[in-house]
Length: 152
Image 1 (cartoon, rainbow, N blue to C red):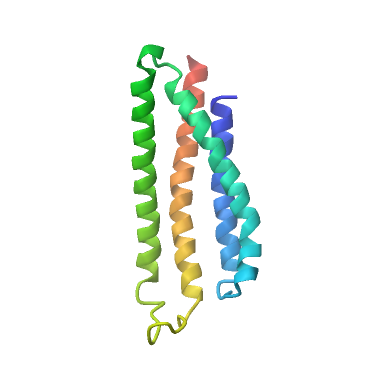
Image 2 (cartoon, rainbow, N blue to C red):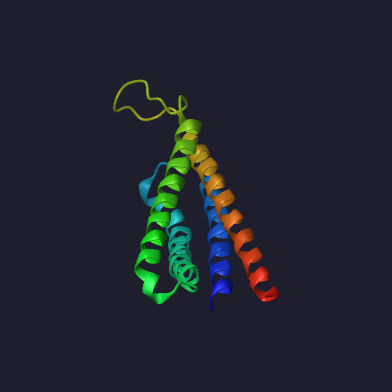
């Protein structure tokens, strides 16, 4: 299915990330582990399927115009670029989470619960917003690539 599959998967990933942020904000002070898991399991499941649907088409499209004799080198470059991109993305998302959380969730003593569990929901919502920005950018670029390839 090529580029349309990739655009669809990125769009679903973006949409479900927004849904996940809404689910988190629906009960920002929730601390019951079972309740939290039950609320998050469906969006995270769909998010995982969408993420998996992005990787393979992306690799296929990236390597489609590579001479087979250079496929090994090109595949290595693609894998390296994906790992570097994932590392940067995880760093940016984690940093945004910690920056928002800094100082608001400090317990009075080690091992004591955080005074405001909703601070974790707020920090997660910001990190999810950053993820939406990344995903939406990928969706726009994917759509532009589809238009460019149809124009050829």
